[in-house]
Image (cartoon, rainbow, N blue to C red; front, top):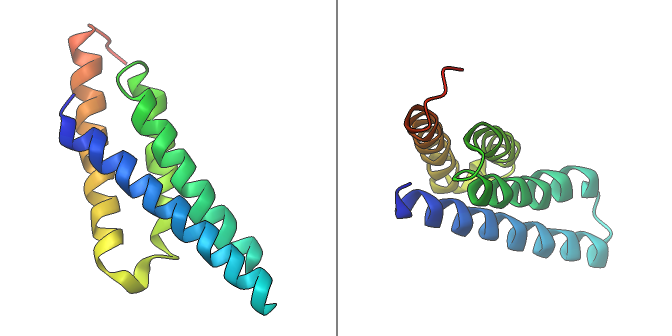
Length: 110
């Protein structure tokens, strides 16, 4: 597994969790709505990205699935940044390629 894919997944996942916690605190302090959108998409998406990234070398199919679900969940709330959704798409593609290479290396056919 390429180290940059692992680092990208861990860093993006961490960024999403931190952003989700910050947004949740802001919502609780100000009383604004949207808690049920921001918390699951950012914190949940970030947690799935981190879990999938860490799991990828040991279980490529599960790692790819969790990373992809987490990244897709986080695309919408981070759309305004432009860069983060692009990095999430890069992570999804790189994770799919890594998972395919790991599965091929283990002799799996599907």
